[in-house]
Image (cartoon, rainbow, N blue to C red; front, side, top):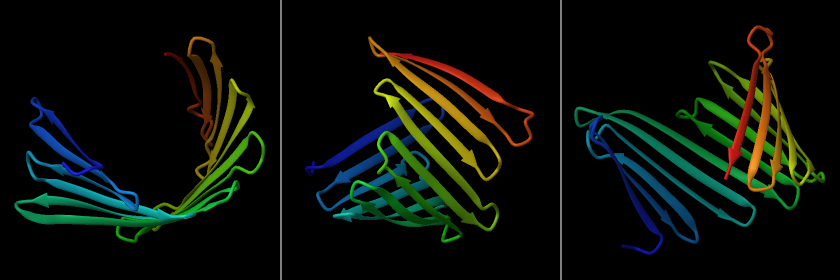
Length: 186
């Protein structure tokens, strides 16, 4: 097998599903592919590469029916990493029917701010998020969306690899407030 090539088979006897995944890593690029080898009903492929602060990628998703291609969905993306400051990226997906602009800003000590603006004819949206590292064991995260929802979480890490996360999400209608608590050991 070629150096940098990884093959993985995922099968399930109860659903008659079998997928073959491939990842080929080179210094210049990474190529991935997933194929339904049981029913030959789908295939996906992507390639990404970068040079210095610039990265770019493309993806293709095929749905196959009766030995012919039923649908094709492609996407393209490009990104630029700013030295010690953050990242800006642009992506088009769904056959150039959806566009996204994302960014993160990491220049502030202990604070990261990130955003995602998405435009599609059916539903434009925006998300703004921030993370504050209070100390090496405590992280606070907040998120707001253009749909009017607000989210907040606090993660506290303890000795022996124990972490506890408390979270809350408030929709704009205030009718379905969600609370969560998660503990992880290990």
